[in-house]
Image (spheres, one colour):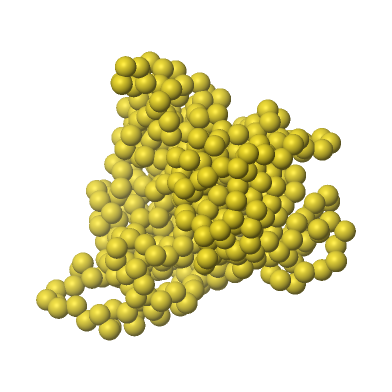
Length: 503
């Protein structure tokens, strides 16, 4: 079913004001292949795919489909031409049902005056069941982030595509969900559909894809057959340098005094009887399967969700945390796993986002001192290496990875004593991950206590000094010393086991 180019991108450039996001890039997609597109955040991958999907217009260059030049002026035009996009950022209607979201394009195109909801639900459930048994009558806003991602993928599968683009599709998925998606993608390839697959996960790329193209700083770098390169080759081309140490050295010796003490915390539904201690200068990992209650525990500690019992002490002193404002005053901040809806304000400037948690220290005579606000934002964004045009640009103008860095800068602006980071590097490339891991260790060295929730076991073990594993809303055990993925998985799945490194 393969042979010949179905999509040709020639000398495409894109400018956002003074920022050049793409500089005369080329990309060729063969019929019936799975083609990986790699690069650091800000390399231009998503920008190019948004151009192909009709969301953005190129500044110059040409797109050819089946050898013929095409103008893709809108997402509807892209779909008419047979091009579908599974967004990295979930773009669903939260107040509509799963079925209504999955079949939205077909519903919009129908001419019948009345909707047959029974037929709609039956059709949508068949599509949804290919990925997961999520009831299609549920409202999307009531689903977890991982299930929303599956709905986004199911929605794309209903389109009659010859080119299907996946932008970080597995960032929120479990291993089982990821493997189910891979089976579907391979099936699409067998039907002659061409796949563009954007991911920072080298294992996925080398297990799934036929070719890999690398972009760097908005420019084309290389295209190779997967069989002819190694993950190290691809990473070096992505970052333009050797990454010798993804995870920095861990805590040497014993951690400091207890900083955050949580005792018998419960919310009456998602978790119960949770007790743990975070010490000064320590990075504590929270492991467990998706849905185990890790995020719910973090929200309870931070006052972002109600709790029914338990106590919290900071530096040995009891604190009453009824809401997030109380948590911030106690020196505890939380970085959400949902960057788009909870981490940043997309329409506000970068400077305004950085200062959003606490404007009091920037206020003079009842007004925000914009000079202080800009100085603070520039200092923190420089420290985090945010790639941006101007500090006054909206956060929506940044790539996903740079939006995440702005979200982290916002937490650091209040000089917290405890930072809880929920999936801090989701959707971030290997170079940016290394920078964030280094930053976390620097903060810990300054005496900050850090809790990291991550579904990527290598990251969780690589960055954490010890890991508490959550199962069914309770602490299943603790992994210390020579930590292994097997030890975490056994505790998370309920297998247990007598390991020397499991407490």
